[in-house]
Amino acid sequence: MPTPIVLDTDIGTDVDDAIALALALASPEIDLCAVTVVSGDVQLRARIAGHLLHLAGRDALPVAAGVREPILRQRNFLWLGHEGRGIVEKDEPPPVSSLHAVDLLIDTVLRERPHVVAIGPLSNLAVAIMKTPEIIPAIAHLTVMGGALGGSDDPTVPSVEYNLTSDAEAALVVLGAGIPTTLVPLDVTWHTFLTTADLDCLRTAASPLVQTVCDAIEIWWPVQRQFFADTRSYRPDIVSFLHDPLALTSVFNRSFLRFERRALRPVIVDDQLRFVEDPTASPLEVAVDVDRVRFVDFLVDRLLAFV
View 1: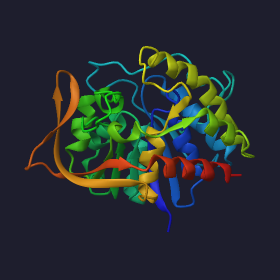
View 2: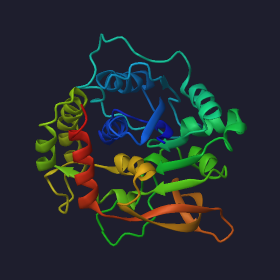
View 3: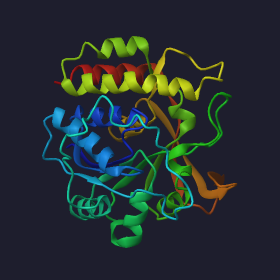
View 4: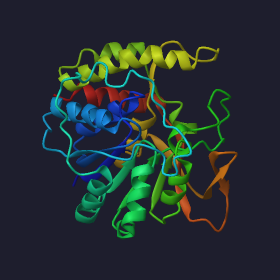
């Protein structure tokens, strides 16, 4: 049976959220119940998600705009200005639920008892837990793309991960709630990416959804290059990292990843979300290694097969 999931996302900035949504729609192992969006201009982010769903023929699937700011309003979410380009037009009507994303998340969890996949800041989920703690036992499992554990031998891996640190207080609420959790951290996702050759391959897809995602990759690619302009080790043929698609894939195909159970406690150190070893902490399942080549081949083949 397909796994019911709620996808909680900050779609629109880094293109990997859009790739993850396309992968969810292309995967029969996934029963996508709802999409909730978080961070900044959540109406625009919801319109982006809604348009991609429309291209896949999934207009009836609910999309809701959620929390705009970190829960304590002491931080800032990333906004680069290119969000929505290549995907939505300014005068396009928003296919967005009248519900707030927090309420859609609560209603869907209590009704469907789904797997929640969080590929953005955890603000929506934190507010939902604080508002209705009854959702905690109703979440079958939580998969989070986030965290930097510092265990990689690769010096190019950033030491700070955006999703969890951008609203670190929300991350403490969610990761401390006792929900069975799989963490797919930056240390692993950093090694998964699409290249210009992969993009050329995806351009042969028949799906309007995949073609629109390719357009978004073309827009994101030069933005991403600016981030790494001073990093000599950055490969210039990388058009997108696959942080979020890898986390999503771990829900229904674990063969690309190796996992460990680790007793880790999330803490805020120097204003950053960190994990420390603590034998008294509830164990997390943590992805520690990935077969990049097999995963990328799988992703490309799955998207090419989508009609």
